[in-house]
Amino acid sequence: MSRKLVKTVCMFQLILLGLAALTGCSQEEKAPPAVKVEKYKTHNPLAQEKFNEARLLWTDSEVCSAPRAAIALLNETIVADRNFAEAYVWRGLAKSELDLRDEAFDDATQGIRLNPMPEFYAYRGLISMRGDNMRGARADYDRSIAMDPEQTHAWSFRGSLNFFENNMQTACKDLQTACRNGDCGLWDTARAEKHCN
Image 1 (cartoon, rainbow, N blue to C red):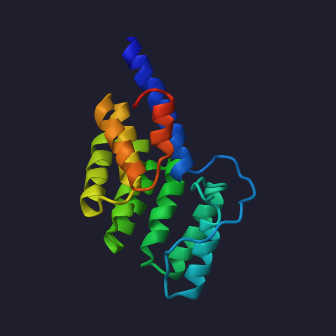
Image 2: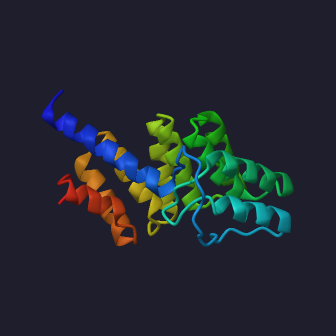
């Protein structure tokens, strides 16, 4: 294995750790920290209550403390409000951490059908990337960025994909753009590891 390839593989592993910290779920079940609930709203009080409980299982850095519990709560959310797009997307993210690839992708797709937000395309791209569908991931990241070039998730995720595909300059540009838009975590890591300057 060439030195450059080893460096790229190491960087991709580092990026995957960063992605897990951004939006993933930990396999261990632990007590969730107190966090504020996101902007997502529904008019159904029971659905909102269950969704809020599920979102409290993600920390500020969006690491899920209990993916199975999150899925159960999001199932209840969806039963109470079948049109609550965000519940499908977050359930897809939790399922992707449990390697339920097809179900995760289907959930994210349903969320996008109900509410085609740029952030949701970025999350579906992450789900695709976790399922080794790099072409689908890139398409979703590109669409997310085209819809809203100032959000951060798609830039960070696409930067990770570019590292994986050994597109180092493009990866660094994506992570730098994510940083300019307000999320410098992966950019700082890539610079500290001397993958970007």
